Length: 225
Image 1 (cartoon, rainbow, N blue to C red):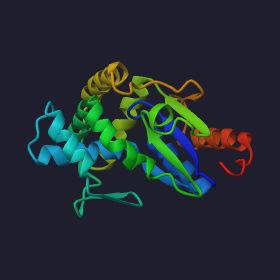
Image 2 (image 1 turned 90 degrees about the vertical axis):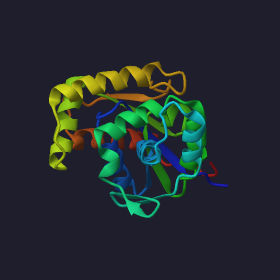
Image 3 (image 1 turned 60 degrees about the horizontal axis):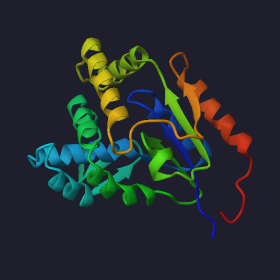
Image 4 (image 1 turned 45 degrees about the vertical axis):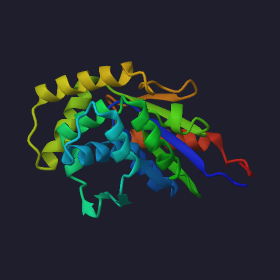
């Protein structure tokens, strides 16, 4: 049986992994998994339900019953489009906080793996190459300075009409980095066989070109995988 190829693109918040993953998937004609959206959806759904961030049992239940649908640049929760709502900084911070709970991560693991379909999948997140798809053929870990990431996040928010402060974003990113790196459940780190790509001084196009070049280096995928 042929198993669909997977390309994983991991990295910290605002490293550019989402944009790069989207463009790589388009270039290859592969499916796309934005795993961060799933955690943001759990954050939004649980916030709306009034669930405390420390209530692991209820958070896990919310994750297990997530009613989500993805479309091109759009996402629906229980039939309501929430593409913009899940990108709020408060929801991102809540998603990072609930992601430390292993039962919540376990509830989302199979959902994420179900995205693996022919002809292939590009998956972006924080533990795609280490936990969700450890057998991925190409693993990329994007890095960038916190200053560069804060500038990117600021531009993203302003472009969407969301007010933001560079100083606040810097503090939030540093706090989220620390939480993501130090959590016991799937801490943020490169897979041992990941290729590192510092995007601090790179354009999106340059980053995408590098990932595609690495993919070409691998050659055709062996049959029967």
